[in-house]
Length: 117
Image (cartoon, rainbow, N blue to C red):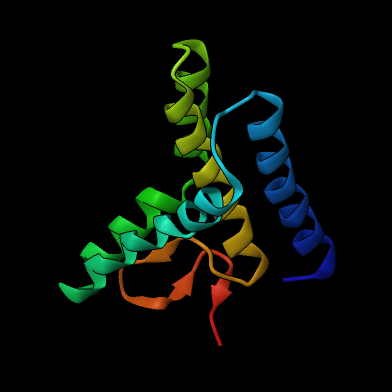
């Protein structure tokens, strides 16, 4: 992935963090840091097989789902749902900086961004 795309993903990661604070979502920094990496629990499906693993990973790393969750939380005035959506979005962008894209069911290393090294 080229540098410009990585910078774009970094900007989206920072934007999700900024939005959380601008919207006044009540959460301390250390809890946010801990929760920031929680979407990677979706990888546990790889313990079953690559198809289940890819489904679990993609569910927690799809930016469209993250935006829908954040919007639902915002419009329903549910701070923690908003936080969940912003966390999912920020984490997905952060992963893409490092080349971890949405997974194809044949291999963890086969992503929509190309093959992982």
